[in-house]
Image (cartoon, helix red, strand yellow):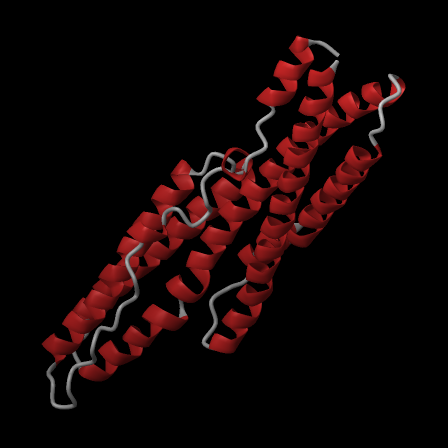
Length: 249
């Protein structure tokens, strides 16, 4: 092992920031919240009801615009996921725009109220569309991170193998690499197919169905990220120990 090898080991990027990149919710701060738009009073006229429903639509369109920016800036998205998310956002935006026109053309409060319900149950921008975008971006970030960490693992394993051939005791480093490999497998298994399953879910009037579809994906994303962080920790330990060993040669 030479000085060149020492520099190579030191150059391996295994920090969470380098491997995981930007958080999949980095766009959240610029995403308008659903907020609480009060319903008009019971004696309110049609103009007040139209204004309230138009406001609900406007804030959702702003959210969709923010989600579109997130998709555009997500460098790890697969082409298939990028296409699906772009189409989903465009379809919801077009549908809400058409619904606004229908509400604005309504001639009675009952029709405005009925169409206003569709703003929520027919689109589920906050309960479904936002998690679909967020977790699909996150899933592809994690998949890319796992691939990068696999490359780091294999390079570290090559150094460990060489040191073992030179008579060095690398049992601890090998155990850490084995754990790293297990954590990468767990991370990949946790999120495999989750994004595609969530993207297949359609808006529903039943909020429990929406929660039921999103909750396991959220849990899987947390599990995947935790396993990736554990793999990073293993890699950093091995890298530090190998640097020490190589430096002694």
